[in-house]
Length: 245
Image (cartoon, rainbow, N blue to C red):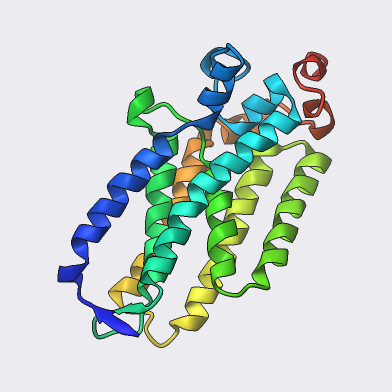
């Protein structure tokens, strides 16, 4: 492993933050709705995200939107993983790639939720966040891939059974965060007081804060019993199916 000093790394952090933020600003829900001659902000909930796209155009189109947003969250992190995976921070055994992938993820999510290109009114970041974990966790071990897929299926099953889309998504984000956090804890248990390890956990907390805060209105409606149900069956029928909800 090669060591890298912060003095030779800080400008990479600034570059990654700026690039990833603007990648996050690319909203595929807006592109898809425009391709269908509609404005995603003026249909359904007005939220430029996969769920609203599913309600308007059907589950297949919504799933495409989800995949694109998931890749938006995961690909930048994966690129930095391969760039920095042979490095550790100076005088530590902390992998630089552990830091960069979630550092990039935070800024992609920030760009998605608060895009300067849409007056800081974007989506809620779930697809980006789940995509981030789906790309980052298999970096640990290839056999994490089927576990990650199983995690996705459990999220879908929860939403299908309870029809609580926002809560199912947030539980999924929290679950993946705990999984990654446990890996970091076991990997760096002898260096838990290291500033870089602290930052790793702070990044995971930041990811959860951003997504949960973006869903604050959903949570208020959920706890007050006013949250709209998310029927996977009716989503598959698109707008016509949603009229009966």
